Image 1 (cartoon, one colour):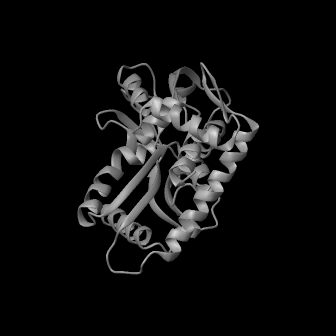
Image 2: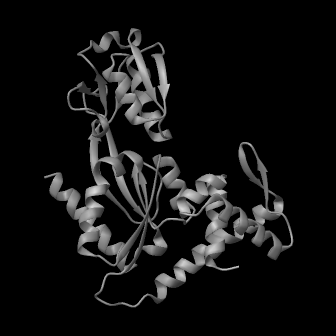
Length: 288
């Protein structure tokens, strides 16, 4: 088995789907299936069980996947350690990013960075902040752009401070909020916790949740259609909608932080350091 086989196993374990794994690796599904059979033949055991819901791993497969994660992490650390210390910026950035930041901010930043450093390649993973944080803790990405406050002992840098908002198609009386339909968007734990604390400190009854969605775009469509209000940071809001910042009992705005967390093993990587400096400088200029 080679490095690509270990990467395939690792990604297959993350996705639990041959279809999704094939899309991420730009392979066909038959190619992925053939590679699995080849690995099974080489190892002398079955490693996956197929079903209509996707795939699951046999005990032997789980053991192989555990080894693949350790192997890939060690291999990347060795590559970083022996990377030539030259003035040329080259290599691969392995970034995890909260979906909303990737959609509204990261595209332009990466475009300009890659224009200046044309030999740098980028692997970008977008997801909920909680899932990006889990990937960072697992050592599968070099850095994570994460919304919300998560425990992190490694290098971290504050990128943004955005207020929480109530967003609706038309102005509403906040005192009547429990009687007004709410569009609830599924979110990571820190955001859920912050909004729950704000709600319980202001109201003694549950919100009137009319619709629950898992997509920011769909949430905004529902609000635009007049189906209800929602609670989120303004970066994902449509400018024509009415919004009002949320404040605590001391009339201080509730703030959602966006952080850049770095994998401790990658902090001295030349490409990582260069991109971090570029990202921090870009955010600093835009927030002036």
